[in-house]
Amino acid sequence: MTRYILENQARWLQADGLPPLKILTALDFSGAGGGTELADLAVNVAYNDSWYLAPVKAAVKAFTGIDPQPTKMGVVNDLQTNSARNLAVAPNSIPRLRFVAGGSSYGGITKPFIAGTDDGVVPTHSSCGATSANGIDSCTSGLSLGGKVSSQNGPGSLYWNHFPILMNEGASHSGVLGSETGNISVPVVNNTTLNGLRVDFASRTYNQRAWWQWWGNGDQYIEVPGSANTDMSSLVFNTLNN
Image (cartoon, rainbow, N blue to C red; front, top):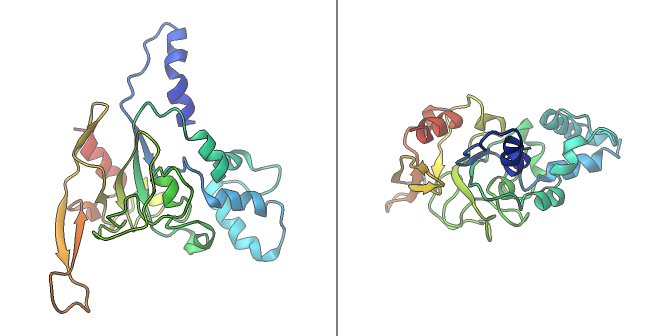
């Protein structure tokens, strides 16, 4: 729906004699622009009445609001990974700022069915904007979702004009836009201006030793200071709305 509006709003408004909207960017909170294996699974289980799939069907219904039956799949068909990736390539003329979660949803029962790290619904390869549906663990190869500076299984490349801005290892899929607190956000693409919008999240680098590390400085981490004290959507609003 967002892509359709971005692609057509200027034409619609000009047809009514109105100026087009000046859209600086689109904010994607756990966006499934690259699809989710959960949708692939939903389409498959819609045709299977086996009793052991009942928990999976319940998770699919909780996510989509749709009881997975062959005649009721609706938009779930477009969220299949192959279908979604055919749609995701355009329009990308407006920067897509992406906010990525990695917490657990639905008791973790969906995780075995989703490639790589996920938020219980959307895989990281999708929420980061990766060009490939291969399972990955972070939006970048040098920083974990939890902020640890270390080698990661990151994306080979990202869709053009898609920018992972914040990652949050603890936030759940619904928590990214909800009132969930207690989770540290990690800046990825930061201190830059995208289409006139300044992205300037505060950043703190620190070292931390694990309980078993008796020597050395420990591991290096990066975080948005104080981010655990607010929900992620409020943090984004308060930072970008200045």
